[in-house]
Each structure stands twice: as C-alpha cells, then as structure tokens.
Length: 230
Image (cartoon, rainbow, N blue to C red; front, side, top):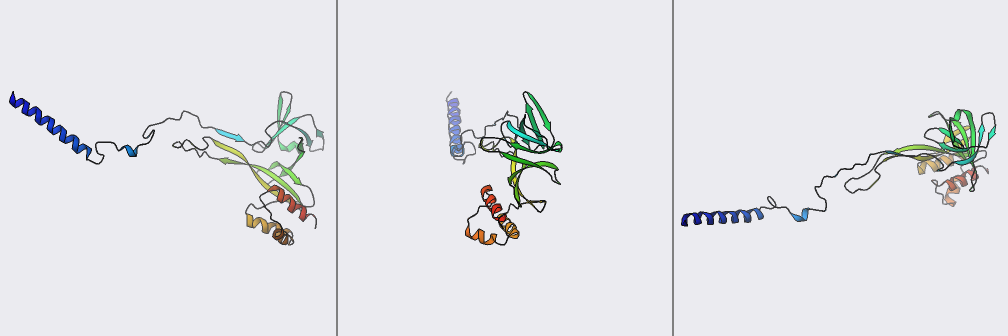
C-alpha cells in the first residue's frame, strides 16, 4: 500500500514538471495570445456569385430626341438611349423597344432642360460606325467619343473591401475634326500641349498667360474657340 502511494506521488510530480516545461517551450505547446486577432485562422466562404456590372449608357433614363435618318428624315416620336458598347441606338415607343444599328441613322439630338446634345455618325476604322458627341462646331470642331473599358474586380476578401464584381464603364476620348479628318487628341499632358501648339504657334503664349487644365472639357472648348478666331 505504501509502495502504491509512492508511485502515485511520482506520477503527479512528473506531470507537474511536464506542465512547467511546456509553458517554457516558447509556444511549442501553448498559443501566444498576442499573435491572434479576431477571426484569425477562421475559414470563410463567400456565397455570392461574381457578376459583370455594366454602366455603358450615356443617359440613365430614356430621353426625348430627334432621330435623323440617312436621307435627312427627322423622327421625333421616340424616347432613346445610346449604348456605346453595343454600338446601337435603342428607340422606345410605349412598351415597344427597337434596337437600330448606326447604319440607318445619320445623327440624333438628345433633348433636356439642361440643353440639347448633338451626336453625329462617323466611320471609324476600328471598331467601325459609331456616334460622337459634338461639343464645338466651327472650322475646327471638337467631338467627344464614348468608349468602354473593362475593370477587373479589386475585392480583398481579408479586408472585405473593394469592388466584388468586374465592371464595364464608359471612357471618354476627345477628337478634332479638321480639314475633313478626325484626329484623336493625345491624353498625355505634355504631348497634348505640343499637339495644340502645332495647330497654332500663338497657343504657346496663350498657355503661358492662362492656366489651362487640358483634361477639363471646358478648357478644351476655350482652346478651340481660340483656334477658330485666327
């Protein structure tokens, strides 16, 4: 009986030593609480389905418009939307919607309380027929082209931040119509200034005297007005 008590005490003593060694083992047998954060090492599952969001129409709502056909017939009974991605004009009358390719349309005018917007058809080598918005009509005209750009998702699942879905959005490019040709305006700031100076050397002095933000549409229109005064 005495021998059994000795063995029992020995077992308790060895267990006590093992517990102390485990605590001193630098984290081998215990967790360091400082290395943990809320939801650490917790597996998560996102049950959402990734989609592509489209924002490719130049007007959110159906808009009253005049549609001008190739033979100069003006049709004003439709509400319309223009989608640069589909390269089609959508016409709505009542509950009926028609999709018309640019082949049959010469131009269209969007009407609103803020003013009319004129769109004219051009035959661009790539991707072909599409409508550009007229901003300045003169000897040198200014047009705005709406393109589409694909943006991949930048969603970060750890931070639960960013856009979860991919997006197709509108991108704007400006063009000059000069001497019967359509020229794309450079987007690089330095090249943009040199481009306009090549059209008129007096613009060098104009840029020195005026603070122009050539990325702003209003400043581009001022430059076009200057060019057309010469």
